Image (cartoon, rainbow, N blue to C red):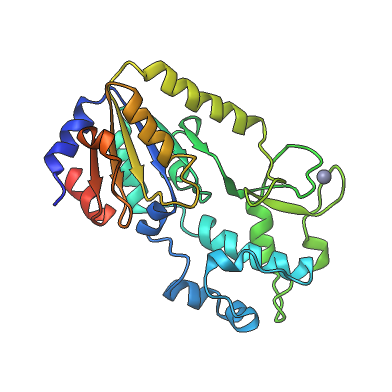
Length: 276
Ligand SMILES: [Zn+2]
């Protein structure tokens, strides 16, 4: 059983909180990449392409850009614009809003920023569904895609294609655009990405002598080098750092930091409801 009082005490005594979040948090918030809603919303795509879930479908080699952008408009809307508000993320915001906090996340669904967190305190390392970039890329600027995504969605025909005229093209080199997600080495880190990366590093530097609570949510072993391992290392290195690791499968911590950590493998929603 999770020691709720201990979690509350650690939160209360912390001078600063760093949240690190991965896919498990958005899944717990209700944004499921497979299951009933996916099967309903993507029914025509599943029929045509035999998709199993939203993750593997994003690697599908579409024959034409018109088919690809019909799918991506649907994918982005489902994962980003349709459900900007979720209870779990807004509860997390309530939990830390009066604290000195910072967020680092590998999630690309904008849930932190869209549920109250200050965008100047959220480092989205792997990009965002809400931005487009040049696919080449010939320059490092990002472009909001909300208007385009809605336009694409309204123009998907019975063959699951969008009109060629709506396929987004780079304003500089006229090549096709792509979604700003880190899938390979064409990922664009724009000026803001570097600013946020520096803010994250500075936040740690400025607080390393203080009582810092690291709250880690839903991070497995896809990209553990971004958040999971550094959180363990900071807990080990800095005297007054503590770690609470929420993970339904991999909540354990190395024995060297056991005394300074709490492992939570129960449902994130239930535990957060008890803390608040
Ligand atoms: Zn370009």
